[in-house]
Length: 162
Image (cartoon, rainbow, N blue to C red; front, side):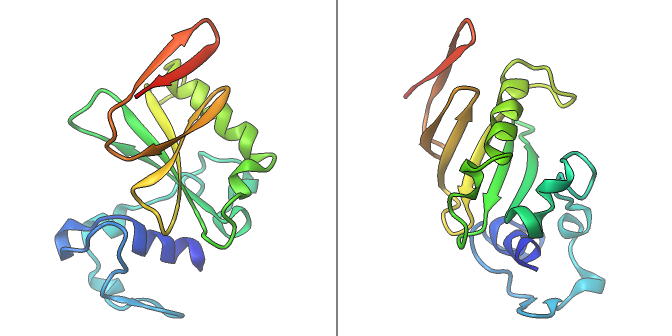
């Protein structure tokens, strides 16, 4: 149930004026969506990457305590692979097999070798939607969403310039 509630809290839903990082006014704890039959289009079409078959079985949100969602920015040439972590397990993303998977996703996104093209991989705690870690193939860098940065590559090494 956490992963569904994380979605209800984390993502912005413009149609019902629900800001990012706040609980949906229609969320009924222990029950789910209070307007499920009439829920907004954004909620109807939301699928985490595990649910649509893009992640291995160990990424099942109830087991991994993480929700993975690719966010396409229509105003940019890149996308962001968001990994939202349950606050009760703040370091689970640093454990195996997840950490290796994240580094692999990062390498695919930065090298444009994934089926979705160019993307960044960002890990965030559910309670901190504006702060997180930018995952690079060889390191992670604390990052505030919207903070200007540049990723530079030298061979197989990546570094962030803020």
